[in-house]
Length: 474
Image 1 (cartoon, rainbow, N blue to C red):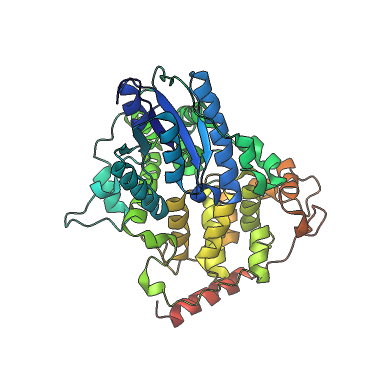
Image 2 (image 1 turned 135 degrees about the horizontal axis):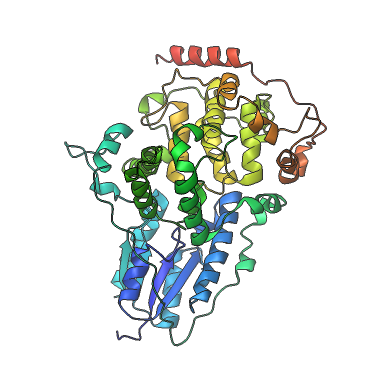
């Protein structure tokens, strides 16, 4: 190895230059840097919306690197290890760095990659950056992991969070570049079909957009965040979820900016910090109990008789935003048009599916996995299990949100419902009409249709859910 031997930096969900520990370490060596993204089986199998968003993020990040005099080398390989080994052979690289991921499939893949590369004599190092606190670094007094959020928050809120690292001034290019795939050939937005054109205007790509979002939020919105974050018709949140999901901004950057706002006395800043820690909590639980992604986290729910038949008419109506419950339908339609959904809406649609319809939370989890551009494995699983009552720190099983009264409470003027529901509206909002351009044609829906009656009466659905819980001894 000499100072001309290139280092491969394997990008995944860390599409940024600033506060990037792995990239910072690479640049500190002074050696040539070859940025790489490998479309392996795990990324190729992403749902339609997350894959579409990742494709946009990759393309944007490639442009950012190009402006720095560098390149993003793209390779498609069923196994990431094979793609890395090919590049090692082609470039003579003897070092590979990357940012850690924490979902079980990624951990299994990355562990195998590290072991195989080290056996070949290749230096293989993983770095933090996707979380503020490594999951194994936060423990209870007895040495276990936290299962309840509040004590978790109390523990980590007083811990130091590493200061964000600056972006490198330059990236040293290798003497020659390896060949790269054409991103267009990957067709990462293909599964979105006509919905891609509808969702695209709502996407804010890249590190600069993420930093701008954070700045606007902390200067203009954070003071009213505690109240406005529950109002779906108000743009009162940071909207950073899609950028955090792909690492276009780091949680460290958000934390330190939020801390500055907190010390400046801005109301709402602490609540924002708590939301960042809630994200951490979800990841820590996924690390310690990966079953949260696939099974009821609370084992006593294993015998609960969920409906798992996705072909039922109620499930189809829920997916289509045609339940006859305006809050539920508006939230589902917001997701199809923007690729995201207001957090209050997520709670309502999840509660309705799992409690009023008594459907397994896995049905909703998988649907969101296909439809959200800000899909995140830990947050998605945690949110669904919280709403269903089967997860850690969950909403109590007997808390069955009434979507009618919730709409009256959080959308008093029905501005949110009117924005997203066109039926029976003489002058529908353009976003309500865009929903019909985004959904599959085979759904056979049009704004001229009549708005449906509720598939399940709200009161009856609640009674049925409580009876089911009582019969199981909850």
